[in-house]
Image (cartoon, rainbow, N blue to C red; front, top):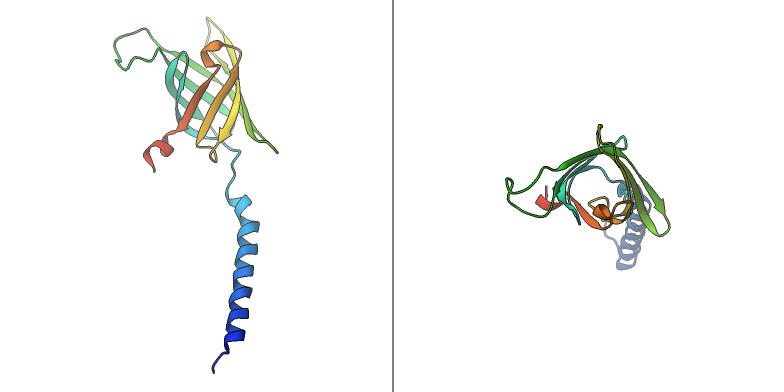
Amino acid sequence: MTMTVGRASRFSVAIGVALIVLLSVASPALADGCSAEGKFTFTVPAGFGFLFLSADGTVEMGLVLGHDICPVCGGAGRFFTGTYRTNATDQGCSFEMVLSTPPPIAHTDKIAGVVAFEGRQILFLVATSPDFASGLALRNDALTGR
């Protein structure tokens, strides 16, 4: 059985329209750009370190004070635990973190910013402490490509 050129082109157009409709409906469900979880490497005015964001909204942060590469050159770092949440708006995706140091010197810092590139980057924009007032966190798998 042979198909005419007119039938073949209408069939191709119908398949193309169906694929476009399918992809436009499925894409937002597949790419959740307002979730951030995983292991991150970050830098802020106070230093650099590692950040772990759990799916349940808990945070663990290890901060190495200063920006020296030498591991035996400076003082000890600081360790924080806390909570975070993300919020999707029509302007994009924002986040809020509340971090605390363990006793006996309990100290709380709040950080707010933006989640970008489908949760692969976090931009620190404002904080209660100038140590965290600006910064960038990159998810580790975004650094290695795995």
